[in-house]
Image (cartoon, rainbow, N blue to C red; front, side, top):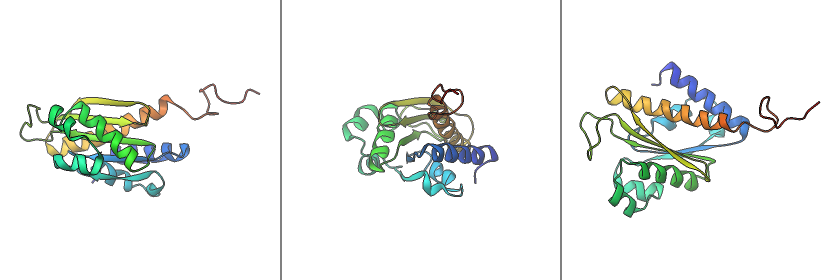
Length: 176
């Protein structure tokens, strides 16, 4: 179940994507489908959520999200390059405007030298892919929920950086 602020962020994200005629897809490892489930809880989400995959096992990051096996062998599944490749791969495979890639360590134990709470969040629009390295506090549930909140907030931030033409304050409207 999502917290009120996460549910509100999901509603805001859906509305922002809908206003733009854009969509999102997610390749989720540590969040195991929580991003998609949270967004899908918003009524009408089928207009903005294209889909997603849970690629918890490393081999599924290749099979389902198109991450090159060589990248996983050299950088590891919990890494900036893996998050970028997850975001790019799922965006392309789901024909979405935006791709989200979430990988990391929810805990309680470290994985491949990464402490619990380390999250890599990839965000791709097909032209630019950015990865945010996060250190989130709390237990497994808190880290996973925090990763979803961050993913929604970061995508909302990217959308705000590029307002729709004709919206107040963007300089793209018609001058009276």
